Length: 164
Image 1 (cartoon, helix red, strand yellow):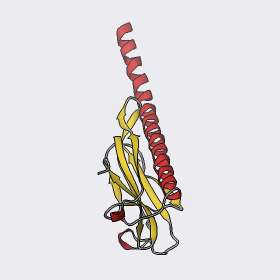
Image 2: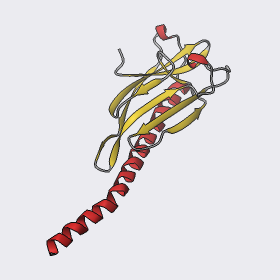
Image 3: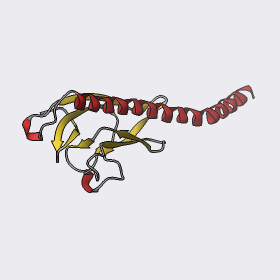
Image 4: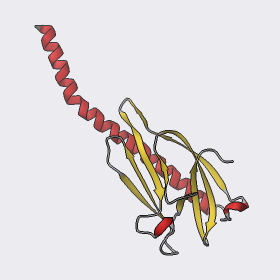
């Protein structure tokens, strides 16, 4: 009878604790991803502040940034997506609708969580090609940032991988 009671008590404790552990895992992964986004934005700002913008074929200033994004595990959940691009209120194909609109939208979601969005003023962080840069997984990621001139505007491009 004691064994049965002990097993029943253990199951009840686990049933109560499991949602709390899941919530903590989502919170921890969101916080970790938010810190990585902060590092990405600061690296982009530093690159833009300390260099001249050049055309992509003229050897623009670049920086390689290593981010360690959540992959899951004990009390953490994995990153499902991270996207970087223009704010949703801008024009087609990632071109800012107004020449003075230097802004970036960074969005991410971890497994079991809701989408988080950060609007960044004063920085055009864009993919090398396409409208949005997207990572679909966590882990150690190497991002290459380059300061280029596009249509007379200073743009920090972001791409996955190591530089050429």
